[in-house]
Image 1: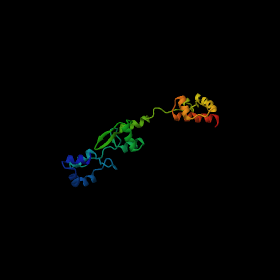
Image 2: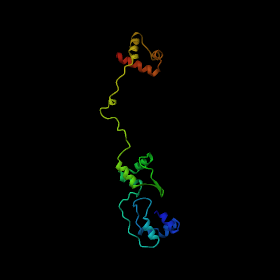
Image 3: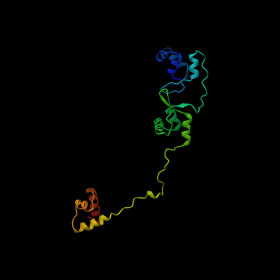
Image 4: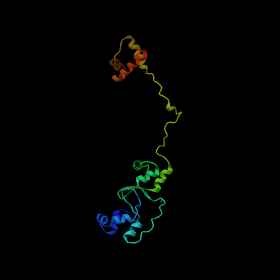
Length: 186
């Protein structure tokens, strides 16, 4: 239960409950999630306090599969950062979680199942050593280059001449002329 839930159970507005009972309540009833911004309390203990009964012993603290974990707790279980857990939920690698008390929670069994399943985000391991696609590309010989070399030896060519002759762009004509000059060593 949150403090808002407890105030509602007592029939008081939250600010009034905090002013009248909050300090005493926090001193007697331990928080279930220490270190978190939103304090959560065990429902049986909170109800006992509200009804002025002695507080029962805190329930067994052994992890239960239905425990709801915050992004930080889920991250600690998975061995990743809290922002990674939120990203996993966005991409579907983890379920979206349950919205409660203005936060997203994941059941412990969901986080443990993700941990046991291992990393399944990358189905394709990529190219393995020895894959024929790993070779460097073979140089391709353009037959136009030898023709341009022969024509250039007869009379100097310009990129405009090459562009008109082969029906290519000015940039392609420049590339072909440069390759032809490199071919002859000029």
